[in-house]
Length: 431
Ligand code: ACO
Image (tube, helix red, strand yellow):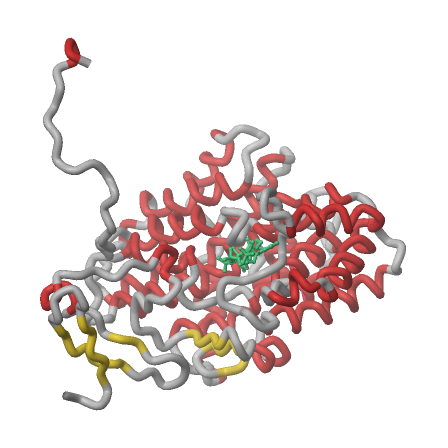
């Protein structure tokens, strides 16, 4: 019997199986359960994958109890302070910080792909004027596969790399267009003299009738949001990308699936939901009423932007962005908007409340990113789109890694069947 194993005994019949324990570089070990069904005829039951490692990955490490987040071994705090989004994207994709030459080449490649096929622009006119930009993102990103056939052979490493570059480059263009369509604004071409974040802001907010001036405060805050959201290991949207890709589907379709998953309010939709919640609360005096609702077992109401599946200590991203959020609100003046006053008081009250403390429900990164985006004048329905743009770096990195993983197989979870046992069909005349 190996020391690095566990033995599972089925107490109903005494049958046993020895399962290997797989050791990570850091973090929790995992039991390799692949033999479990063949040896004992048992599956594991784990709704929401709370205790299941679905893959091996070298990309991102989280210690939820200690509040640690590493991209390729580098602490998020260091990247947030010193890096930028494209350098961080390179790190996630290629596994190392780029040399000066690699960095300049990468920037050049990403700039080369920022435009979209003119045919894609026609799509935007087909959407309802009030379509949610996330709905447009799901459709248009999936549709990229109909335009870029020349890089769709997923067995070809170079094709995979080109598709990854295209996705990263075109996302801001598509995102900005999804906003401009709703406002009847012309669709500008990207400006490659600007950096990645500046160009996105230009594409969002420029108008042909006057010069666009980049706001450095906005760019700094956006840069931080992009780095902090770039990857987060096997979350719902990333797992969706991996599961969709496991069948061999093309990367544009798979990233579109990831965008759909991110849209939900329990995931990327939370930053938008935070603002809806603050608007509903209206005034700080109303906060206790909403706190009581969040605590009431008979009420489904939850405080948006609080809690996290993995971080049961403070979300390290929230710690970084909280400071940026406070600086921004201070710079704008404390009375700039009553909503920010409500946000600050809600944070304070929840952080002192037994219910939230006992359950380790701290404000998460979306609580603060929602407030920052609101303070920057970003339209509410673009909040989750911004998250999707930032997370594209993670999605494509995880997809590239998966495509090289020899153990990768089509994702096919099993189930604990609780339906009817075998029964005979009854003719309609007898029912
Ligand atoms: N407000 C009030 N109570 C909450 C909240 C909340 N936001 N979140 C969790 N709880 C309570 C639950 O009711 C439960 O209480 P109980 O033990 O008395 O039954 C306990 O805390 C544990 O909750 P779970 O749902 O088991 O926690 P889980 O890890 O499954 O959920 C989640 C995590 C989905 C993020 C949850 O905290 C939530 O819905 N938060 C609000 C939405 C949000 O901000 N999402 C963003 C996530 S971060 C991201 O995607 C980048």
